[in-house]
Image (cartoon, rainbow, N blue to C red; front, side):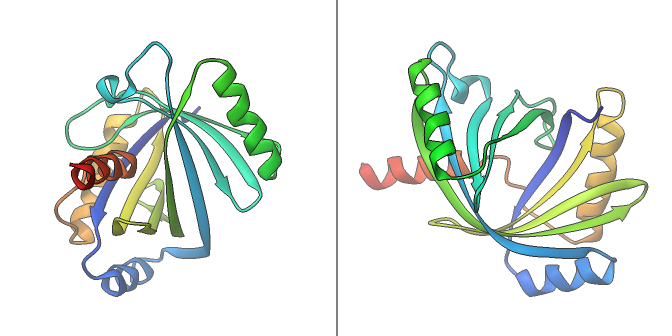
Length: 189
């Protein structure tokens, strides 16, 4: 069971070049989609301190609730991830938000982006690559591979090889949420 996510993110300076390299390596592009993530603060734990995340993601009518555990290494954003789909539609997303609020969770911030997903099989791993245009932040590429407790380190090493193959630089370890919160704090001061 794959319940660990090995992820790396890089600012995009040349989206067309990265897109061309992905396609030359056999990556299959998916549809472009609009994603809205609503992040929550736990009533007892400081997720900013523990480096955890809890969110509702809406992609069109589809809704997912996701928990991301603390980071496991210093090179990538490898962590446990638990994600569940729930009823479709904006009413269902609002009801889930109301449930979390009733349990003591508070809304932190929304993160909105347009994402083009690519998939590819590389070195015996199934990679998911996303070209993201994040509102108020800019363009990024995310590389993700799923693993389990027994092979996350091998998956991480393979992901690092893929990063080198794609000539990506300046890994960004902060989440989009963290970058936006820092930007919000800077513009408020």
